[in-house]
Length: 406
Ligand SMILES: *Cc1c(COP(=O)(O)O)cnc(C)c1O
Image 1 (cartoon, rainbow, N blue to C red):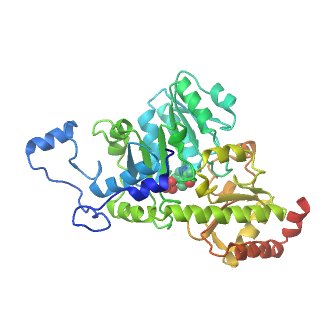
Image 2: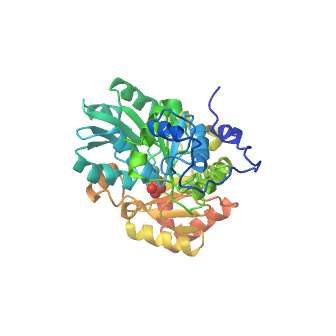
Image 3: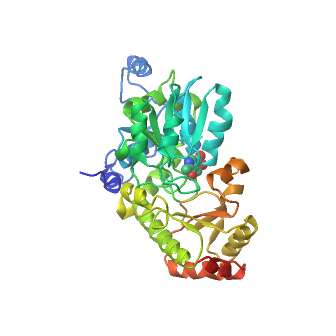
C-alpha cells in the first residue's frame, strides 16, 4: 500500500508511562544506569535502549524523531537545534577532505553559503547545477563525488526535482542522495522515489508557529547511528542538539500539520490562479503554466496539494518593495523571511534569503530582483485576501501593468 504520511503520524501511539495523552517531557541532561556494566556497554554501543546523555539522545527528542521517521517512511531520525544544524551535520558526516558534492544551484541561501564558502576550507568542493537538467547533473559527477543534494521543491524558484531520475544517477555512481523536503512536508515523500536521507527545517511548516528553530534528519538506522556515534558522529560531536522542551512543543504542532498543509495549499492554489488570470507573473507548481507541473503532479500526495509557496515577479526591486509594504499596511501579512506561519509572509528573495548568492549567479539561475516569495497563510477567507492583493497592486500602480501583460 502507498505510504500515507498523515496516517503514519496519527497512528503513532504515545499512550504509556503515567497515561498522559502527551508523552512526558524529558527534563534531564544525564541518565542513571542500574549497573556500572550497563553504562560501559552503552558507551561501547553494545547495549541498546539506554539513554546516556541528552546531546546523544533523550526520550523526549526520540518521540519527535519517531514521529518524523514515520512521516518520511525512514527507519529512524535525529532532531537538531536548527535546519542548518541538520544540513551541516549530514554533509560533514558524508564528506571528508577530497570528497565532492553535486548540488542543485537553487537551494536555501544558508545551505548554498555552507557548500560554496565554508566547505572548500576543508577541501570539500561542490558543483552547483541546474537540477532539472539530468545531463548537467551527470556531467558534474566524478569519482570523488559522494553526495547528490537537492530540495524537493526549491528555494526560491520553486523548481521541481525529478527525484526518480536523480536517484538513478545516485545509484549509478554510488552517491548518497540527500533531499531537503522543507517546502513540501506530507506533499512529497522523497523516500518513495529513493532518497537516502531526508532533511527538514522544522522551523517552517512542521512547527508552523514561527516560535522556534529546529531541524531533523530522517534516514536508515545505520546512518542515524553514525550521526550519533560518540567517536565519529557529527550530531554528537558538533553538538547541535534540540532542547527537549522544544521537541515536545514541535511534536504537538506536528499533529495539525495535515490540516494546515491542506489549507496552505488550497489558499496558495486559489491566489496563484486568480493572480495569474489578473496578469501577474506567478510561479506556482500547481499551475499548468509551471514548467514542471506534470513532474510535480507525479510526485505529490494529491490530498495535500502543491504546498503553500508561490512567487510573483514584480519587475523591479522598487516595485517589489512598494507592493510588500502596501500588503503589510493592508494586514495581508508580514514582510518577513521564513515560511509556514498562519499569516502570509513575504520577502524579496534576491536581497534577503538568497543574498548569499552573487548577483551574477542570481541572474544565471533566473532569480530576478523583483521576485517576491510568498508563504501563503491559513486565511479563512482567501477571496477577501485576493481582493486586498488587487487593492494594493492598484495602490502602488502595478495593477495596470500586470493586466497589460495578458
Ligand atoms: C529555513 C530553511 C533551512 C534552514 O533551516 P533553519 O531552521 O533556519 O536553520 C534549510 N532549508 C530550507 C529549504 C529552508 O527553508
